[in-house]
Length: 74
Image (cartoon, rainbow, N blue to C red; front, side, top):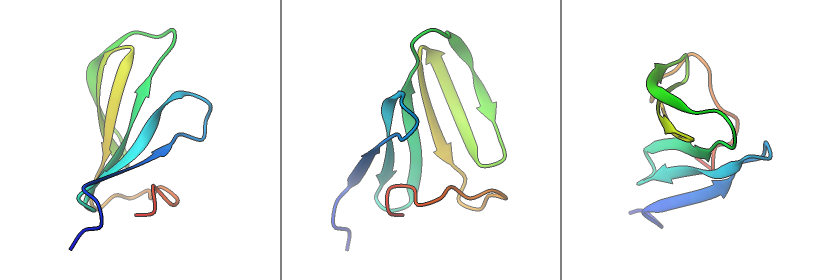
């Protein structure tokens, strides 16, 4: 079974937020921006993101062309 439902780790780029893994399958990151306001949905090579003002959440695709390195131990 799963050791935990949600795992978190800090972002290593100096911004406010964290990386997460939910149930060992859904991974991504949450970030709070300091200056830029965004209201949009973005679709990139490795993630799909939702941006609400200064807060952003992005989830990784299960099969992507570009892999993140050691995302929260997943």
